[in-house]
Length: 297
Length: 286
Image (cartoon, rainbow over all chains, first blue to last red; front, side, top):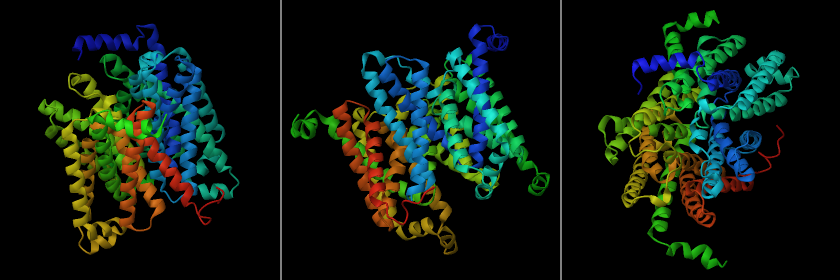
């Protein structure tokens, strides 16, 4: 634990970008929070909040597989591999739910554990091989915002642009499909296309967030800002904006805490900040009588 | 490569092979039994939550007592498991956040807290976060066999003794409540057992295998059976079989044992899914 004066000093260094890499760190952490907040809100409204958990875990075999095939830690193959397995997990969950009597929550749990188990198998093979000894499993599991590269920030910025553009252009159909899927289908909204589009974007976003948040806790960044925003507002555009803001602030605060206390990974710190916001929002919501809250909506 | 080298020879390599398979089978059976009740009450993902929050429980117990002894670890995991159940239940009752999101908010926050406490304050403890996730089947100590054996017997005894009320509370909680069955107490008891099982299991097999062992056998059995006792038996069989086959796979490929068991369990599930698809529930386009 750093002393107070050390903490103040490091805080000043952090926010005045005292090191070159800090600009990338802060930008990356804010982008992760923003993307996860927006996509998380859309998933939350479709009762798919825990999908982020499954997709985050499912990125692991993709990372390990890409590493095994290429033999080094290049960004492009890792992102392609991880996105492919995360997307495969999303399709598996959709498929299980449609063709069998297995309940959706269990389908999610099966896909999550199966893909993570496969990832564990691949990683154990990788670590036994000479090239993979320093593959940095711990960073992939728990995130390290400070080690983010400009290339990864660029990828995050690209995903953020696509997400924001998509949400703005498709706002009406998304709104209909989120609150009233049956009505949306009747009104001719291509709900299937929207569903798979959301899945693809979520898979990409989760993969790109893994460097900062880690595979285990990216779920927290998907769920918690969205749930907190939902407590504060019932309108979709306000919820999207609030979730993006809460996510971005939590992301930056998490990266700051991780910089302040060496050894603390950034993923857990981000999720804890988001959970604090959720706790405050929950307390605010409890103080407001239910009837008044409904009337205000 | 003959059948002998593939199937028989590994058993002559030493005690660890026998002990690892025995421990993994016990984990498979006890988790499968508990998992059926979680599954039927639509609480499958509580197993994901409880497996993750065992970590903050262990770290908290270490920070409070300064020991990593079994008693402190059990109480820590049990405490954080019950705390999670209480928090999720509290958020659910307040009614502002959806059930699945409530589970997600609580367990990710507690898991994050656990990782931070571990790295910031308890780095000298003999706890390793990635070991918690993946476990070490082959390095499992002998006393774990006794703990898990006792736990399995206790779970079987509890299911047999409480068969009627459990059956009722699982399928029709409202009627059960009217008939005076203590549904809340059974729920807490189930969560307590799952928390204890999680911590007893995951030294051996890691948190992820615990999640898989709680969900996959129950889902497989649910595809194949229509009655509770049949479901419990099939699930237990699935748990034991995936432990045995997973052990072989990990020996052949020289890879993570827990991971291999999860993969085998998932393959068995998909086999059951394809086999059980009837025309009535198959083939319907989305």
